[in-house]
Length: 190
Image 1 (tube, rainbow, N blue to C red):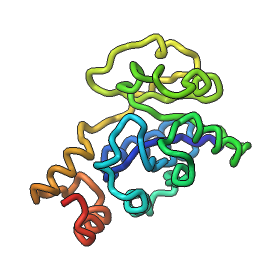
Image 2: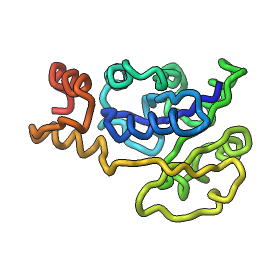
Image 3: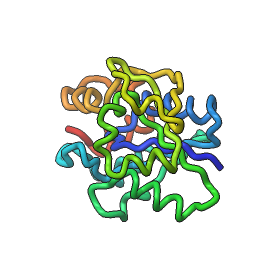
Image 4: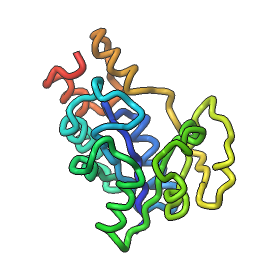
């Protein structure tokens, strides 16, 4: 099985994440796409993150009716902060018959050489890159394991959604209804 991995905080998951993951799962050679909920991104402060189990639950709610998508809490029991290479290595050991493909935005390419053991990622795993506005070309774009996928992307961010919630503005259509209801019932991001 060929599994695309979309890492993120998903704080909260939104329609941009879902559109991208569904496109990758249904319009590329991937069999499925897993959302890998990261408890802590090494490049982001953790003080703005909702508890990881709330974020995991919201992803589960968002993808419940889509058999092409999955969610993983694999990083919850790993050392923090989570590093992509460690997660990929662990997943490959756990599922030796699977091929794991990293899905990243084009805006991540300039900083990719700062990732822990990025050379090993590129050596052992394919990387599918989706377009992001304002991105610059790097030497990584020419490597054989890097594939550009012309996927639709929405210019929406979890930061914007959290700000809307704090200002008591509508987030309808930005997140699935089930996610919006969960946020409202549990009074999240206020």
